[in-house]
Image 1 (cartoon, helix red, strand yellow):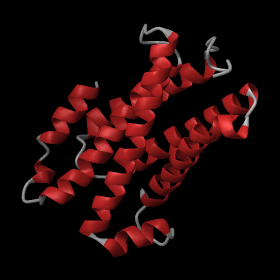
Image 2 (cartoon, rainbow, N blue to C red; image 1 turned 90 degrees about the vertical axis):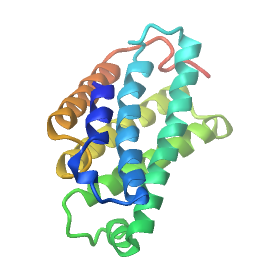
Image 3 (cartoon, rainbow, N blue to C red; image 1 turned 135 degrees about the vertical axis):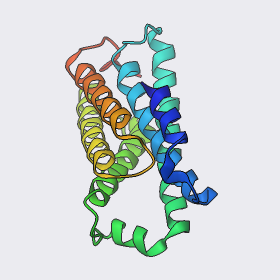
Amino acid sequence: MAAAAISLAAFSPLLNYRDAIYITAGFAGVLGFVVLLFQPLLSGGFLGLRTRGARRLHAGLGALLVLLVVIHVATLWITSPPDVIDALTFASPTAFSPWGVVGMWALFLKAILALLRRPLRLRPNIWTVAHRLLAVLIVICTILHALLIDGTMETLSKVVLCAGVALASLAAVLTKRPWASARR
């Protein structure tokens, strides 16, 4: 599913005559969406990895996801600063922009909470609820953002990837894993 989405996006006719920075912006978004598929699979324990390994990989992919979103927005800024300003100020006429912006800020908040979890001494149950609520918000916003864009991703693979991310996220949220609320 993930490989198909990336492959089909790589051969999109919409990339013809686009410059490298525009293609980078689009692929940072596509790769970020693919990373988003693996996050709930890891946190839900569905990939068969040991708990510690899954937790580390989940954290590493979370950092990669933040980096991909920063690259996505930064390269879009290079291609058109007014469009990014409109999106960030919720003044954009496009339906997909507000979902991307809300998802981005939710992701950044989640990353900050992850970094400050120990210094803030967040109780495991508070951490779990906050982490899962932000995850759900990120997934919903990202799916809506992706579905509303006519861009690099091919339609059918995009819909299948959206369904995969939604189902994996739902399964992870509804499945109680031993390390989900354990002290770390």
